[in-house]
Image 1: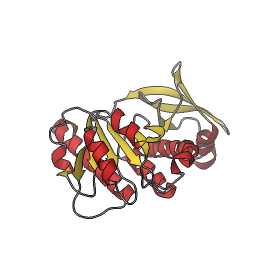
Image 2: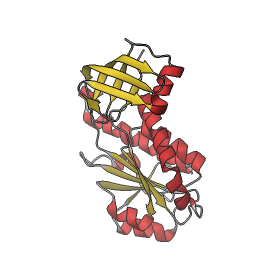
Image 3: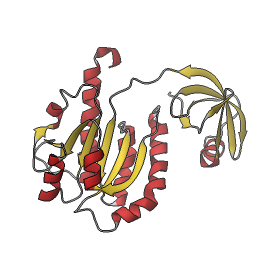
Length: 244
């Protein structure tokens, strides 16, 4: 059985410490005891840690063995147009499990009015969801979650290969990934109702290539997660048998 992983703020003198809700979960839910071992990660490196202190609001680990990092894939940066927040939470959780490096939230014309302002208040909750998902799937790094921006700003600042998931069609996503090399992938996914003609033109002019995942019309969160899975699968295939 795989050991549980926890993210800690930092390592100090071969020690790591958890406090607050995470420590409470360990002591009250998992009933942690001295001598038990868990994986601890500071967002850069991961260690096998042995519990040396366990109190209600504080758990201290002694770092025993540095763990090998997971194979690095080219970053996947998800630019998601805002939609209903219960579905957005699902996107953050599952996107984190699928290896999204950064979430950029975008206010599109067909995003419900006021979602961008309300999203500013939800960012901390979404970060907590991402933290829990990252620990569950034993990531080496936490994803970054950025405050919402207008589409025109997001269109110009994205990195690497820019792919626009478009319900109107385009190049098959898998084919568009064949020649990306080690570049980051910026993936733009639309709101409920899709892109407007003006938005599509703005994105194409900014260097975004329209891609498709087929003829079926998917829900916004389904399309984003399915595309993320395709990108990560293509990265694994491109890395060759040594990392498979």
